[in-house]
Image (cartoon, helix red, strand yellow):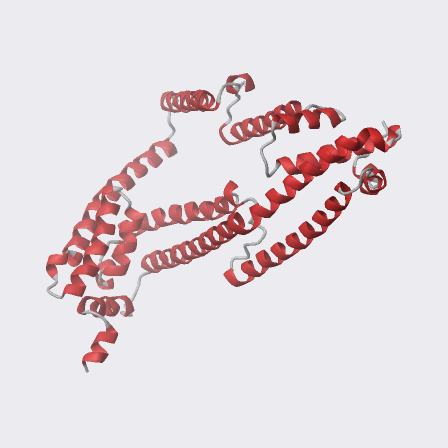
Length: 376
């Protein structure tokens, strides 16, 4: 008998289960409210699972993959330095020399993705670069990034910023950008306040004010209601007390943050459903409006998670399911190790030769296809 009771849980958990499973009549508005809560829970669970998979893959990528890319990069650097040391005795034609230049810069660019270029590496890159120096390449890339960023600002906020305004060190540049954005939003707000409002705008503002008043009142009401049910002092059972202490921490945090959505979630989880049913329809409609905003926010969060810069190298592995994501990752690692082994053997073979002319010509023979500007 005692064993069965232990399986069911503490007295509070049993009462909680009864409240959660009660099948009470719901109005149309209450059903909509419940459905939104369920959608949000599912979306939050999905975001959480995706996040866990991304973090798991990122950890494995950092521990198991990066080291191989760094080793490959170092081997490529050693290889091009060795070729450079032998270039005079290889007696290459003008056309072959152009191909070699393209081959060396291509491999150095690839290596620089995983290793910080030294002065010697940059000097060698500049020696073989067909068009631009290494610094010019970096400056061009930064300029493209800056232009793309400014285009996004214009598209999102309608702000035209002089690119020269951002040509400052990182901290100073970010401070300047913040100053420009703050000024823009302040001017927009002032212009909006000065502009005469039509009837529709006045009604919208009145409704927003009412929503905010109800929101603030609801935060306090839900907090008080939850505190009455969940306060640890309301239980004599020790396991109940510990459970309620943990839940109350969430309640207090949500109240301090004025997080009505989280308080509503906790209310749905830990209050009797008939108490929620007694909430008047107008308030439920406002709750529903808040939940719709939360749903939009979560969908944006899910999209933004995919484009997190930290996940740029692993997003192709995440299928949304851990098992298949791990399979993709393992296949990538297997292919990488095979490619690395072949590359190591090929580069080692070249570096053993006193005059690697024949091997170098084999390496560069297809470069012409990849670099169509070589014969200009």
